[in-house]
Image (cartoon, rainbow, N blue to C red; front, side):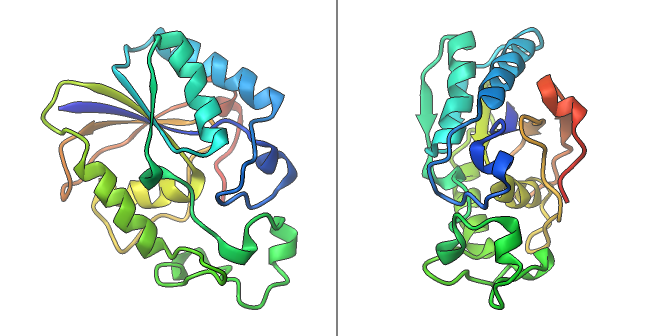
Amino acid sequence: MSELYLIRHAQSVANEKRIMASRQAFPLTEAGKADAALIASQLSEITEIDRIISSPLIRAKQTAGAFASVYNLEVEEDERISEQELGRYSGMTYDQVKTEEQYETVTSRRWNWIPEGGGESYSMIASRVQGFFQSVPAGKQEKILIVTHAVTFRLIRAVLENTLPAYPDSFPNNGEIWKVDFKGLGVYHPIESLLLGNSRDFVHNP
């Protein structure tokens, strides 16, 4: 079966400034770049990687690039693992969005909630995430690194644990890696968390 290593991108400028980045082009901070390089080096001491697949957003691609350098691989991009489109809320700070009456602050109520201005509901994200995993070869002996984002990770975990439309409230820290032996859709997958680099020093996001 395929062995998947899923990582949330390293610290971005948006993370540092508490901005809801959505699909906007926020790069990694200098600390994030250094952490991505450290995590890549540490992972290389644990396992080989055969493929790297990344969201096309710059913060994910910069993170993937650190691994590509260590493993001497090309980075494949896949829009289906990009971050949630937040419509008109994109680029707002977490404090600003609290003043928005139409913003759904309760995580568990976002399955069918569509952010104003062309945003995506969680059900929409789940659909593209399922499409992505349908394209991952479950029966092939392959080790794949997948670089994605916080909100998308919520739906990825639900897909891998086969709980949809229920999904978790929490998501990984920046740079945290989930290891999964992928068996295909429709079954429960145990998830092992690997805390490398600076991710081992953080508490989980709410």
